[in-house]
Length: 469
Image (cartoon, rainbow, N blue to C red; front, side, top):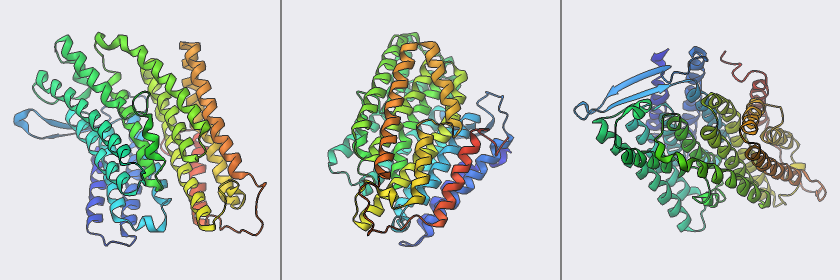
């Protein structure tokens, strides 16, 4: 089965080549993207059926490519259970986002090309097992995201866009600094799990790990760094670009997951409690901001931030055994986030087309209302998916570690859940419903597609990988 593993990286690149030669203003690019995503999803599922769930070795599937042998650089790609689970959630989320595009957006060749190129970089990042490969994919995903936000983000202030790029570029430079230090003392490229074995002065080790941590924190909206990323999200009206933006913190989280479990120098251990404090403070702060916002996508951004920080603190504070619970939660988390984004944008488009109030919009669209309600209930933690069990395990572990920290995290989760439930109430409020206005509900095809997603999530409540094991 290792023979099909390279397809994970090959298929998105081939898809990009096909899009380059596709005609403009037609659906060919859309079909290529959808076919590529579905094909890679099939590869991921097939790999999951062959993997050993009890094997924690990072090299379940392994390929290596010698590049610049004279410089000691060999690119190594691996996939284990965790990375395949996260990729599963990512690909399903992107499929939902692509299906949710408007007919006009589907004809946008540049959006399709840059979106698929972003997916290729994310896939490479989750499979990279050496420092050079990890850096290439970590840096590469910023280019398509910056271009798409600039082209289709409707950002009112250019300074916000430039600050977004500058901050993330600084993170790339931090990771480059760490890579150069590692290369200097190792005299070549190194696999990620072997970094801790490199002998270097204590001061150099502190520089390397501080640079690594700063690189990944630059991707996660943790106070006081760049919670202002919500200004970027507020102007996005493309489900694909919005989902891409919300994948950025995932790359920072994954970086911590890969590097944090490696032995870190004692010089930075005193700063770990500071990260924990700021992480919990940000969870509460962002949850309160989400409660005060009137825009649903802003509330959804706050919800995403709270849970990304929960997963980050799990990585830092809890034993390595809990990492697999993060993976199972992320599958549902990514799918629910993408689905709610698409559903809300459909509702907003219906409001614009029919010149009606956003409040009570779901009262005109009963099909959309039922599906929207299901995904909100999954998001707030009801026992409807695998996220319920795994988040319960994580929160319980935090309470056992520190009751105060567990309580503060639970308060933040309750606040942001209340924000989503209140928004659902606002959208379903039929008090001022105008009987004259008739709004077309979502089509049978969209209902069937979303019902398939709902069945997938509900069955995962009983067995998260019912389709593979």
